Length: 354
Image 1 (cartoon, rainbow, N blue to C red):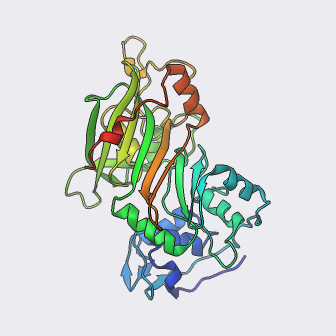
Image 2: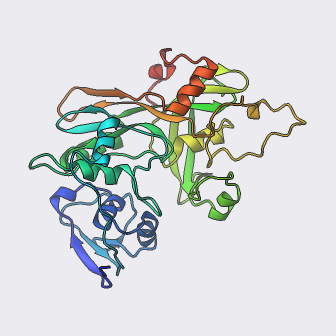
Image 3: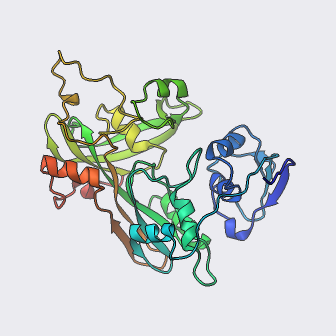
């Protein structure tokens, strides 16, 4: 085991400019857990330009980053080469590819980045395909939760990643998600505008954990305006189809991009996403009450029914990138069970931008 028990100061290179601090740390120290890296940032042990910084801080070329003493293990070995298992898996996920970027169809249950106890994830698998001749390692542009399926954007260079990241921050990227939710939201089309903050008690979340679910319960909470941790979040939604009063097929467009935004928003309006272990924690239905919100027909798999369905954004070289992902297997079965037609007109496409 290698050891680094002295603080070090690293200067940010041009190739890393625009990268988030948390992602830069993850690449720099792949043997450390995401939880540990987040902790040293949160507690102020990592300094950017001599000051405390958040994980979301964008790094600039020439900045100095002070890293506290760390005990480092050798990074996990990743099988390289285009014939490797990981490379083949990435190719099988690819929905679109050109010389600048790739669009993947992330499957249910596969993490995008590593964390405590997570050894197989998209970011690590991208190592296996390697850069093209004289090129760079592929770079994640955004993230999806482990149990969210669908469209995931990957850049083939830092420059393209920075351009696409700016597109996301400027809200020029249009993201459309599909979900099955309990009950039928009213009105059928609307907007959810809330302040969200991190920091729910982990003990409370664990106590409410459904049997057999992973012990990774970090939630966000609805907060008041003025809460120092609060950030505004906005989602546009539309009911595409329904089996009233049991459930609805919801199409959603997040205008902002907060952690767990769609999942927290659905819970907040009383229509949590089916199969969500973090934001669908109400008590089981009382058999003495007529509670249609819990009367989900048998046969629906207890998996998160949330799909990053479609991504539309300006391509760095001009024109428009517009890619859609198919339903994951468990959602396809549910759609067939309820007779939902995927070719139906999605009303969210007509929603205003705000």
